Amino acid sequence: MDPKAVTVGADARNPGQLRGTDAGYCVGIVNHHSYADLAACLESVEAQTWPPAAILVMDVDADGEWATSLRAAHPDVIWQGMSNRGYGAAANRLLAEADRICPDAAHMLLLNADIE
Image (cartoon, rainbow, N blue to C red; front, side, top):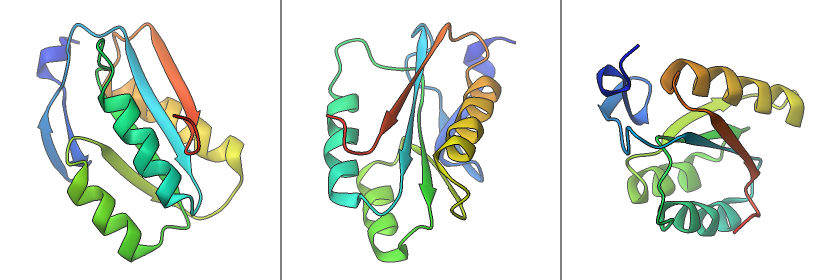
């Protein structure tokens, strides 16, 4: 699949344009009520000189107020939510979504929200 034909955006229902189509990696972040940490993590990822093709966040048991604020501040991030079935389940969903969105990416950087 041509990566330029793939679209990503604020969430799967509201796609935008794929960022950095020549990027060789996607970033996935598992978040569980660590919104202050997540904000710093997203800023760090977005500041990279070699940007990822996509940034995905799996927001486990999301807090609506925090999630709304962060979505507005980071409109290019792909946001998904799920109930708390453990870190492994969230990581596996991120990996599957990254494979769908960035099929030509050679790597996936999987992060906890407290990583800068």
